[in-house]
Image (cartoon, rainbow, N blue to C red; front, side, top):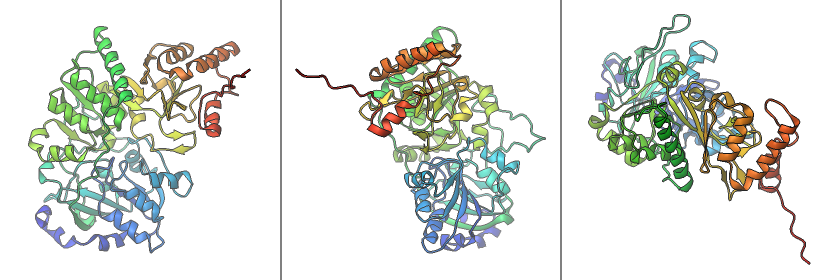
Length: 503
């Protein structure tokens, strides 16, 4: 295993997770690798959770995105977390956040590193970073994600390295490690195509900051991959039909523009739909590469993909990491403040496809909160892409829970993406192209094309009566949240109808 530490002076730093975790003190700010379950801490953070069962210790934890192996939940259960940022998906942690037991900062994924570099966040006391191996110059070769690891390594006072021997050393070369200069000396990031590589292959670090090295041998937690169902297939069909029409109108070519897709079953279904389409030589400039990405590569439809992590099923994990010679020229992993940087998204003309929890008749989107108050996961990178994309697309089912919940509403209960940043809305019912439309036109288009039939008549009534009252963006404020209130009281957003009187 010491062959994975090519700087011999660091051999003496090898220790156990139980010893290394003693470096963490109460009140520390910890920066850990990990982006949507990929390349996360598999030894130190779980050991911290164990320590928290018998010791009163609380820390602030920053990562790239979510952690795998239930680590967030274990830390939450052990009451180790004082504050967490910038993203999470764990149900135990989510409940603690919504109960006010843990503070959570929901950030655009492009911003965390920027806020650290500009000293607008607390200094990182300790970084925990997973690596495939350590180079002779002390730099570290990441595993299946880059996330915020470059910033953590540069700014942390001390660093613990987890060398994961499950990951082959052949991952060397799949990363493009570039750190933009601090303000006011920042230069243009010279990426003009998804396949451009502009940095080095390992993360630079001062070897004197490395306090401990721990070995692990664990795969990333597998992604939950759901097969396309009737609704997600319908959404994909509407969206592919829209792209085909854009080609006919001369707005796009059969190669489209670089694609971004949020994580989850809807995004996977949409990307999977490209396999049987007429589109070819596609590219991606996204934040996460899922199973569908590598399926498209295998089918010959996708020529290159750029992101910050690989979050895939166990089968796909073994397929990709076991055949890196086949895939290494087809994708690249970057720091998330590069993969999600607004300027590059705008420059490349990215087509962004993200998931909404709900949207309203004017196109405002809620992607984070249930009932306006309880967070689900977080905004992630959807805001980075939505505001700057060539096409900003949001998808969701029209209704769920036995059609007792409508996902198209008079007014969203929480706004993450305003109507100004939303171009296309898609449900399993249909697609609304909102470009060039005034608010009243947008509302009618959404009602006509996206609303479930059980709710269309009531939503049309709301809009008509709001228009009679007037306004650039007509609303009936006394009714705007009535659907949410109705659901909280009765378990359904549907209007109650009086039972017929039987003679």
